[in-house]
Image (tube, rainbow, N blue to C red; front, side, top):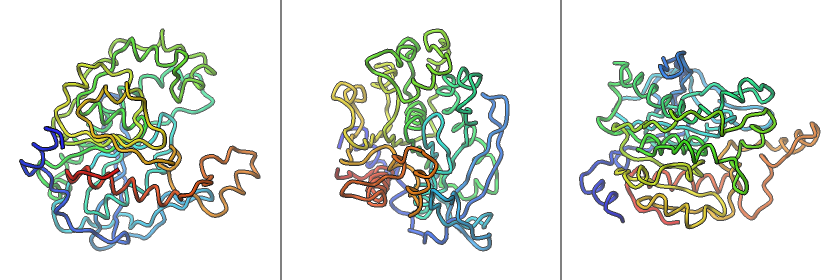
Length: 341
């Protein structure tokens, strides 16, 4: 256990391990609209929580392709005070509805989970593609705005455990939660992130829409988004780690866990976060971080002539198995426990 983790546990900062586990059938869900000053417009926020009485049962996120999860919409919040988890799931163009499996899990474990919906750029719109590189600065601010709104709502604040705020992020969401921990982008490195041989996940889309990062990235992306309210972060396959400044990564003073799905990152990238704990899930891939697919999903994708990679499970382990392992690692990280790989 490194010094940062040891200090966290010694000071008793981790409320997470003390909360009771709630039934998955007792997960409450409601939708909020909150101001997002950095965007100059409101954003939608999903709130997942241990449910009290009432609410309307629904299968959130269910579709012909995805199973969704059971919630009780607009149920009361259960009695008690709970740790708050900021959740940022997916890449630049990912649907936040595919985060339901981990949001419901964390709420069932006894957390109040806050998931902002960033405006999704339209795949066919050059205009939104040109604006999209700025999302890397806006999404950490979405998380901060959502936290401000929840902490500023007296009815919700009454259910928050004092000082217990953490953040969990997947992909570009992992980039965002690292920014909350103090990581800052180097604008020059970000501009070069689509230069060969290393290319990020959205580079093909940028190129198809005539977006040149060398001319579209302002120096303002190097601003700090650190939020001292956040006491720990978990980043799953975070993007753009190579574009963060080494000094900002070295200065992070809260516990950071990085979970890598599949082959993981090379040793040089790992050394950029010297204080982080790295955990690997062998055999997993990025699609295992999204909702579980229905039994009909592969056939439906074939009928539409679509790539079935998002739902294909052709390895020795199922998506449900990989997600159970991810959830366990996240639980251990939020509780300040050493998680076995």
